Length: 132
Image 1 (cartoon, rainbow, N blue to C red):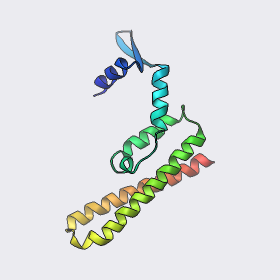
Image 2: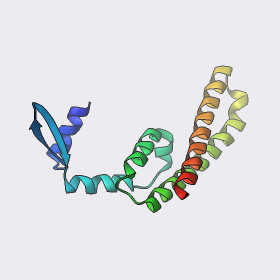
Image 3: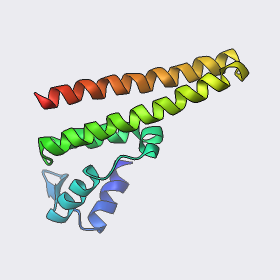
Image 4: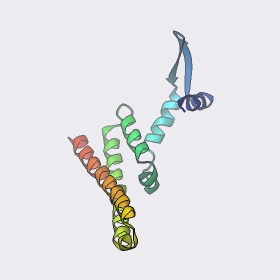
């Protein structure tokens, strides 16, 4: 899946490739860097929390060399807010729906809750680390 993505990035002028020792070497262009920075700084949505948590963590990982620490802190603060909000919604739903769920459904839902709680704890630790 990486090569079709690289081809798309080349077609849009975000990267260029050159041959080096029989291998393709890719280099990001200024336009590509600007697009990457824009993506990194895009707002966190509840849909991101629900469907793209891995992408959020990937965005955070790429910030190190491109985004100031202040913006990284804001990103994590927003991540915490969105996680808290969604977790509260899930917990409220579970409280009302738990009695209508089968045992396996309850256990699966509890796994989801535990995952989001873990993500929230990680985000809080990350914020403390960044603020030092």
